[in-house]
Length: 252
Image (cartoon, rainbow, N blue to C red):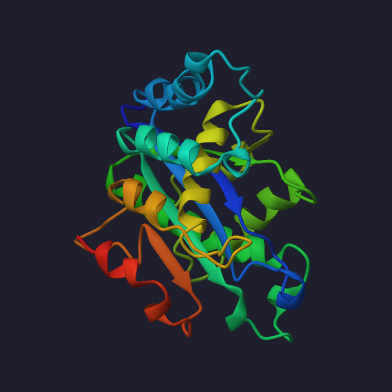
């Protein structure tokens, strides 16, 4: 039996893939992975139950069937972010600034944007795991149009591409696709990626909310002092950093 440490990575998204900003398309699309060592998975997963106890049960209210970030108000999101901040996991988030995408780009085709983000995500997830001398098993949150077979085929293809930076520390044929109701860790991943996305995508009133990201920023993958190319990868270039002054506070 291998003595290599085993990690689990749970992947979810936030934002939409639309490019019609006149009809409310989000300016950013995010895909995030929550990487946890198998020894710590039970503790991190318990955040879901702890949040439900703190927010609803302690107030004698009926809790929801699952913890879904978009259904929480600001105060509830603060509680979840505080609970996440204390947990032993590593987060990688990839953000695509959709205003920087040409209307003639292949990324405008169905699922291309998602796969593009997944490629950059898997690079960084595997870098982290490889640096720990381990292997990882991947679980993706189910989404409309997500075909597990096509996802696995895509991952196998990019891993075989010359110059690919996805390291072979996982079996692409072993990738899981599950609903958040089936795996509580996917509810954790939903909260983590949404906390990041809320710092970039404005709400209905045009306001962004970087507070949640500030709470969990120390959970983002930082390698040799470099966080913005690892734990938070933003592309393409062209967005105005002045719109996101909190980015300067993420550097450790």
